[in-house]
Image (tube, rainbow, N blue to C red):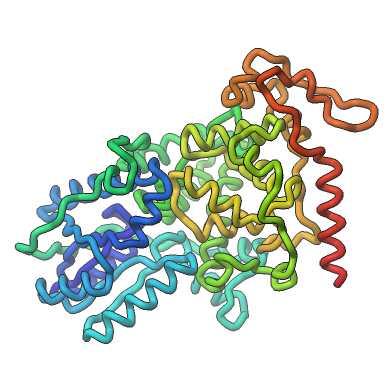
Length: 470
C-alpha cells in the first residue's frame, strides 16, 4: 500500500480530522511535524502559546504511539524537509490543513508548488472551520468572493451540517524506520520551562461539561465578565486539539434536547452563533488574504488611524484609569485570555478613545494570547475598528464606564484584576455635567483617566464622518 505524508500544524489531534482523512484515502499515513521559521516566530511571540503547543504536540505523539506509530519531527524549511522525507519514505504526496491568514495562505501555495514541481501530490484540506469556505460561498451567488456581511452568511451557515471525519476504518499508519528529532519544548521558543496551563487533551471533556451546564447560561456569561462561564475553547480550537465540527454537532444535539427551557435553548443558539462568526472570519481570510494588513472596506483604507498616542503605554499596561479596560488587559497578561465582551470594550477604547491603529492592538495582544489564529484576530479587530465586515453605518463605540456599570455593577471583575481597587467602592452615578464620576473608584495608586471618553469618541466620529463624505 502506498505511503502518504500528513503534516500536522495547528490541527493537533487524531479524531474528526479532515486532513488526516484526506491523507488516509491516499495510502498509509506517515505523521510528520515540521517546525519551520514561521512556526518558531509565532510560538516565540507568547510563552503561554508555546507551552500549550508543546503540550499538545506531546499529547498527539502519545496518541500515535498508542496506535503503534509515532510523530516524525523535523526542524527546517517545510518544502525541502518534506521533499526529503517523501524521498526517504517513498511517499507519493503530502497532505495538510489550510491556513486562513494571508501569510499562511501564501506559504501553503508556495509549498504546494514546491511539492508538485518535485513530482509529489499535495492535498490541502479545510479542517479549522466547521463549514468549509467553498460550501457557504456556493450559496452566495458571488464570483468566488464568499460573504462580506455576517447576517446573510449566518443564514446559509445555519442550513449546513458539518461533515464527520472520524478515524476511517481503513486508516493505517505507515511502518517507518525514520528517526525523529526531539519533540518541541517551550525552552526552544524562549518560554523557559513553563508548563502548559491548559491540558490540551482535555478539550472534549471541557466541551461536554460546558454544554451540559454553563452553556445554558451563555447569554448572560458572554456579557458579564465576572460570570466566567464561557467555553474557554479558543486555544483548543486554534491549535486543533478539538474540531470546530465536533463542537457544532454537539451544540446542535444539545439544542435538540426537548427538556430545555426556552432561555437555555436561546443561550445555546447564541453560542452556536459565535461558532458561526468564527467560521465567517476564517472564510473572510480565505477569500481576502490581503486583509491581514489592509482594511476589508476599501473606503476605509485611506483613513488615518494614529500610530502613537500619549495614552498608548497606559493602555498596554492596564493603567488607563478606566477600570473595565484595565481589568481586561491585566487578565490577559496574567492568564493569556480575556473575557470576550471585555475584549470588545478594550479594543474599542484603543481605536476610538485613543484613535490608535487596530493593527497595533492586534499585534500587542498577540504577544499574550494562548490562542493562535491571525485570521480571527484580524477579522475581530477590523470589525471593532469599523473597517472590516461590520456593515453598520458608523462604528460601534463602547463607553467603558457605561459598560462597567451595566455588566460589572458591583465591581467583582474589576476588583479581581485591578488590585488597587480591591477595597474601593464601585461608582454608580454620573455628575450633572455628564462626566464620569471616577473619584470614588480611584486611589493614590490608581491613575486618573488618560482621556475624556465623551470628548474623544465625539472627535473620532467627526473624523470618521468627514472621511466617508469625501
